[in-house]
Image 1 (cartoon, helix red, strand yellow):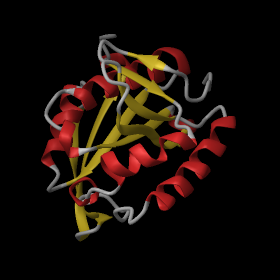
Image 2 (tube, one colour):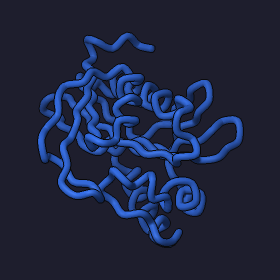
Image 3 (cartoon, rainbow, N blue to C red):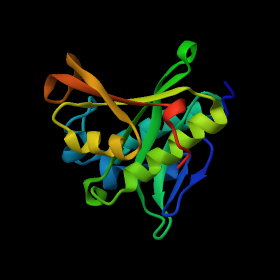
Length: 185
């Protein structure tokens, strides 16, 4: 593997870049404080921008590591940040990366997350050398599954009572894409 860390990526509508501490207020306002965003996730809704700034302090310190991948999603047209996408787990021994993401509900349904996901998948396959990219979602978060499908991922199965969200213990739905199935788009 050729770890290169969080490198700036661009798509037609998006810039995926490293977070900065200056992003804290916009992250808080646009998604971290939104109950609907964290509804199916294991982290609590942020109660203040100070909590968001503390998280970003931790995240930005990790950027020194070549195997740390965490992007803020910025709209090219407005410069507004709307969500994030990251590698949440790496299994080097099988060349596998698991991605996770979230985005403010104001931007749901506009194809932003699939567009960001495709850029990340391309980078992880073509430049880093992963063979498998996987993702999972809480069983009731079907919109996330649709985004995974639009990223080119295939449904692999549902693990019963294998995860936890703010709703409690939950089934987890898993998707993946292999490099041999990746078409480069």
